[in-house]
Amino acid sequence: YVFTCKMMTSTLPTPKVHSAWKDRHQCGAPFRARGPACAPNQLRPFSSPEKVLGRRAATASQSPSQAAPGTANQHLLLNWMKENGAPEQQVEIRSLDLPGAGRPLDLVVARNNIAAGQVAVSVPERMVVTLDRVFECEFVAELLTTDKLSELACLTLYMMYEKKVGASSFWAPFIKELDRQRARGAQAVESPLLWDDKELEELLQGSPLVPAVRQRLAGIREEYEALDTVWFMASSLFNKYPFDIPTEAFSFERFKQAFAAVQASIVHLQGVPIAKRFALVPLGPPLMSYSSTSRGMLVYNEESRSVQLIADRDYSPGEPLTAWCGPQPNSRLLLNYGLVDENNPYDKLQMTVTIPNTDRLFQAKRAALQPHGLSTQATFDLARNRPLPPALIPFMRLALATTSEQVLQVWFPPPAAAGGRGPPPGVMGGSGGPPPGVAGARGGAPPSSSSGSSGGPGAVSPPQFGKPSTPEVEKAIATLLSAYFQKRLDSYKHPLWHDIEVVGDATSTPRQKIAARLTKIEKSILLGCMEELKAYAGGALPAAEEAAAALAASSVKFSP
Image (tube, helix red, strand yellow):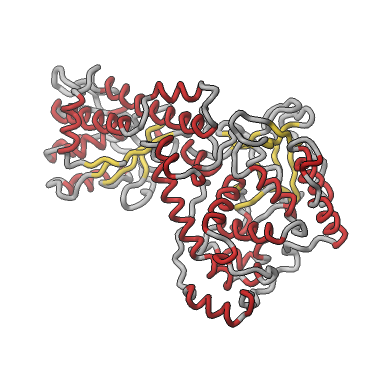
């Protein structure tokens, strides 16, 4: 469900050739090669009647200063939709003044009482920005999004040129509202892509989101540098714009800001062709807030040829509407939409454990893992509702096994415990990618948890972790994992109590609050792991210094 920036792997002409093409076609006009013919019923960007164009231009010229803050923009967008054939909506746009936000924030709220099952929002397809509209033909759209450029980059470039067209653009009212929102979600925060590096480190130090932001920025930079290639390749889009090629018309900073705005507004439509799957929907996000617990979704209705939101519950007048964002952890929600949902059931951290190939039992361990869909490098989900995944302890037993007998005795929970085929619960694919689904091992129940030894950590293992190994191995597991979790906790700039204070402080800025919410949740997950590990170890964990020294000396590696 979650989109990512695709890295550019184009074998198309280099920027040097682009310059030559520009010299040949004066004023930066693009090379005008013709694309394939479109189907007769294919939507095109500028097929509206001339009289509607006139109304668009008149409406777009209205000044927001003529009314109370937010009111002019509200009527601009809704009137534009109505004039272009959208049905009467059950919602309205309301401007809210949020402390520290800097300017009013617009949200979609119920206009009347809305009953569960009622169509609350309905946006005709012709008013939704998708790649098939941008490139006029699905063939071209798919060509440009297959290992060439991400859908988001294509949509971003299109909207930037449409904004450059000005009030005469069909999309001018929609673009005005996106500009007004400034890529902010319902919590008045932009994606960390737009935070400066100092603030990113100050507020999110220790969070896995920091390297994720930098990786995404590197991807955006690569796509920006590939824009000129797309300009010359997609004449069906760009031959109507009398402007310079992309990297001369727009700086990287402007492209990054526009990319973040498009990213915060994107809707991922299900069950549609590839050229329609990423959509910019008026009245969708960021005007409509995403929620991890909502059961309502923005979906494409083939019969009415519109994008609709069916209310998942009753709404009262003035109540903000929400739509489900898919199973995304809060780190993704903040990166993509500027949101943190403290009730998010999909929240998690990840850890990767690697068995070194220098282990003298490496081949035996790899063979023992394969029936369970695992490799010698496995990534585990540390979830809010189950901090210590059931497969982690068995994997550690195998990693630390010193004899062939110990390797053969390791038991893994069956995949059925995760609700279907695949690797054991809480485990993602290792170095070879996501593993294929494999049936469970040694039946469905774990062996006896009695280890035959007395006392010591792990002498009696909780049933979900299976039969313990030797006391030495069980103690080593508790030592290494406790050191790893503590190391991650120590990497944050502030302790948990500081996050709680920031969230409750009325003087905190929206960015400070949202960052504290995220790091508070992440630290709570790690502390939950420590508590479960303590119970597994019989109520006590090794001393911190002893554990840290063991972790540094261990051949089994942990990341991040």
